[in-house]
Image 1 (cartoon, rainbow, N blue to C red):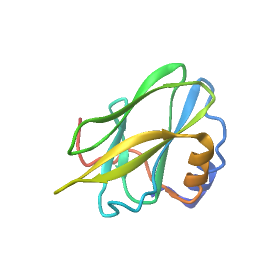
Image 2: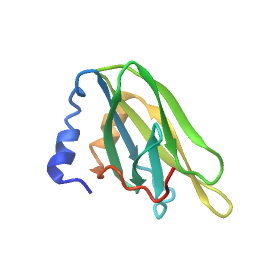
Image 3: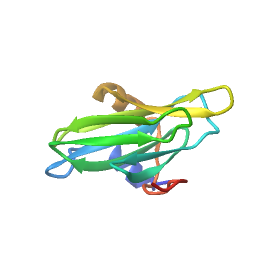
Image 4: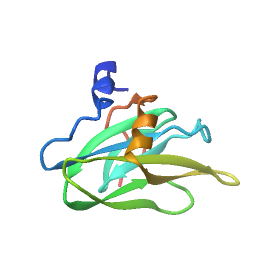
Length: 132
């Protein structure tokens, strides 16, 4: 996990670095609490999600970027155009199947994302269980 100071700073929702967009990716659902699922941005590992955690990263603004999550059912990819200077909020959710749990990602509003993220703990970037 990231330090309490890093987490608190990320929860200030400041503008990202010049030319970049901020990306908050989080999981706050009760379903599938025991499951951990990898998350990637543009093929680079963001981390392995767990319940009640969020990740913060930045991407180059003015471009389309791919957010992927691990799933046994089908590829779960969200492609979005990211505007420089803006923060984006992506919620990962777990969907239970007959034998395994999968995951999906969806963009949420800034208001909803900020409300959700302030209740969560920040995880460190870069630890995925699988390689790409």
